[in-house]
Length: 376
Image (cartoon, rainbow, N blue to C red):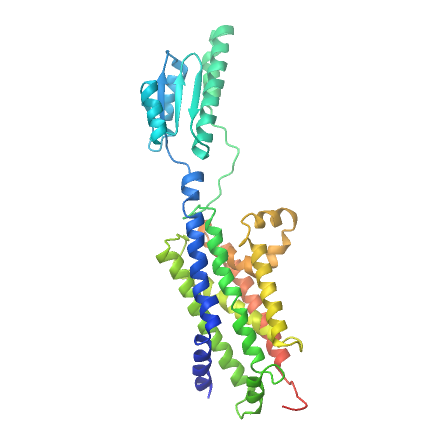
């Protein structure tokens, strides 16, 4: 009897047009938009690469020459310098072959044609060059014996940050939108869980009235419905993660098997949350659906789906909000897999999801038991 009901529950779910649209097609569409919008921002504007510059030398500058040598050496140099004349340098800048032109004379000047991370870094390098040159020239003029100590002081490495162990396979800050997209698909599974609850209540739907009149025990109907919802939601989560990773090429980092596991568990949480809402109260199904969707979108907003810096704002002013926000817990589990070399934080998030699943499922079962109807 259970397998018979499970088969028809699965048929019912996968034949529902709204389920196909919102749980399968919409995440693909939204993920594609995110890829188009954020795909190259990090690489172009935030990730540091060797900066190509043209150097136009009008007079000798030993201080800058030494610094230029240091900046263009090594496996990952800060600058890639091309010494040329002014006309050629301007043409290279216009054609986009270099980020800026460095004019070397008694002072060092910079000319750029745009704004961005590379231009900002280049401006800072030139400012530091001029500062170092001023300090060294002042030391030569006032106390030549202190020149060496001044150079050593300027060259000393100052560490103001503490190193923290991290595997950080993908440091793109915009990948958080894709984490939240997966979490959104998971939490929207509450709609299928809600329908399982209302479809087993005689006062909520005609199907519920028929089920309550049938000889099949209520617990069998509920278990078959929940199992069918879990299977359907798991299929949606696997489809979403697979599309983002292997079609759009979003590199989530970490262990992919654990990523799938966290995504499927997130789907379970979404279904059980909907099941609890569907079993609570005597409100009509439409009202419960509106409440469930409103709460889901609100949780997604707080986790950073609509505004990327929302998590940072809440972490500063109300850190407890996202500690209890199930959507934030879901997206944080994916983040922990990517950023941290150990699984302690990831396991904490998984435990948090399990607590919510047990809590919602238990409350839903308790609220659905021993309901009597005056007439059916």
